[in-house]
Image 1: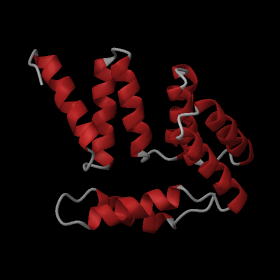
Image 2: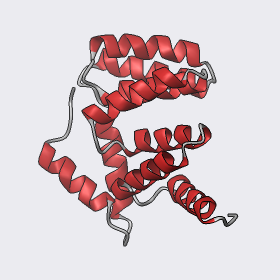
Image 3: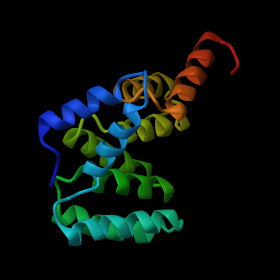
Length: 163
């Protein structure tokens, strides 16, 4: 898997965590761009095809492309993250959860995987674990309206207030 140098990624994540200025937006884009590169044009094409199938609302085709990607690049977190989305879209939450776990094992700072996990846990009614996942995602990237809303919603639910 092609990636930025670890020190450069650490710098980008530190910049992403900043709440002032707009440097975090560039850091987020740089991180996402680094995550989308496998180091192989053919494998990157499989990721693009899988994401295009997701965008077209065809999770079965996406799962096919992304499974082929994972078969050839089992250390590429973006493949697992995208396939988790496809599985979730297809209503297959067990495989989606397994792929999110693999994504996070390969890249513990993958905030989109944490955000997706939080949404799935909340949908399943596991509010405590969902809240923990929303918070973990925000610890990495505090600039996520969906995650901020999730924390507010679950905190209010926990205290008996409506949001």
